[in-house]
Length: 262
Image (tube, rainbow, N blue to C red; front, top):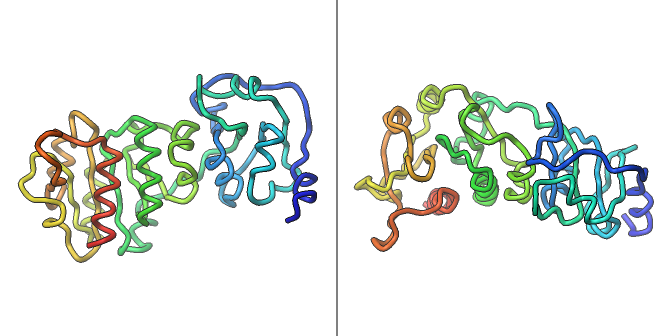
């Protein structure tokens, strides 16, 4: 699309600023995303229902692709956009209100591509970590991330910005009971490996040739006992003695790389 045509396509209504500062939930059932990669990926995702975009004219020029037909755009200055997002959030001139993505169910994922790993997160609640994990999951071809619905952050702007577009491409399965979900994975033929710093076996030694589900716990407490007991093996990353542990998002990236290169 030519730049002049794109300018016309992206022209929207100007009006008063609406909404207020927040963490990413614009209202019930609605998500607020910000940042170039997060917003661009959401706009290009046919599964995402969009409502309204606030943007600077400069940021609009940098977007790749066309906005949905009859899409509402409100041009605004950077100070106005600052008031729509979490304090000091790097929105890069783009703030999007949209609907949350539709639910993805575990049986859908288990029937998909067993050669791609699953990533199970046990009470990882920091949205920056979950967003970074989504980004690594997209980079290394994970089939999905699986979390418990009550002990995981909601979909929103902080996760979207940290995921850098991966929120739109990596399925996110929320389950009521992680232990039961791990049982379903075993029944589908997945080898479940929990990452634990105290394990004697390294991840490379524990990796099977077939389908694998990697299980990571929150920083500090790690996996809960019931979740760990539903793993087929516990394994550690071979880090040096000077460092006790890694950030959970870094550990996830390394583990996914190990699976991709086994």
